[in-house]
Length: 225
Image (tube, rainbow, N blue to C red; front, top):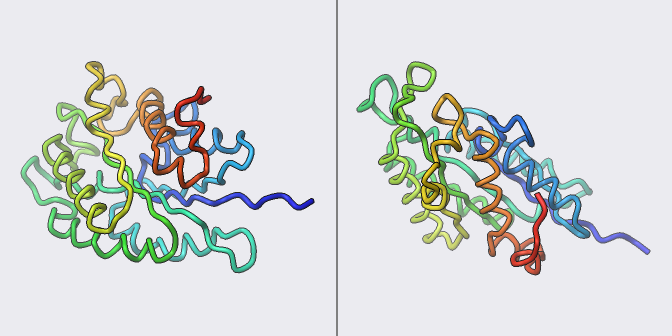
């Protein structure tokens, strides 16, 4: 009796996808990988997050990264998850400096990337995470602020609606916690272990992703971490 071949989900993004800051369990994507690995028929997750990545760098590496994760000959991954935009929003040099990728360029790039990704496999996009403005600048040169993050997450949602791609906003849910600053590390930018757990709690119950994974019954049941 042959075993069913599990689906493959390629996760592309920045340090948030990579899991930076979660010294306990390696980040929300790693938590998802471990959780699905323990389920019969759970999809395989390949974490391809790169610290410092922005939209343009992600778009440049996506085709090659995805094409090499099929496992079996001539097989392509069956899903792509994108987590990008935080670094694009950063202003360089001063609080009102130029953005690393301005809003118009960010939206244009998304409108180019999402159809390309959809031509390969179903695509899922997660939103952005908050920052502590009083901790800026990051690395003494990059300024992040909440108003800009809300704008860029709105652009992510707009592009996903246009491309008919499932989108999971994160800011609203994370900021609903009155103690949300405690979800961030000392640099004010990267999530700590509790922050990654909070994102994981949203991602693992995301109906669109569960439906793709064939795990809808897990949405309302007890889900292990």
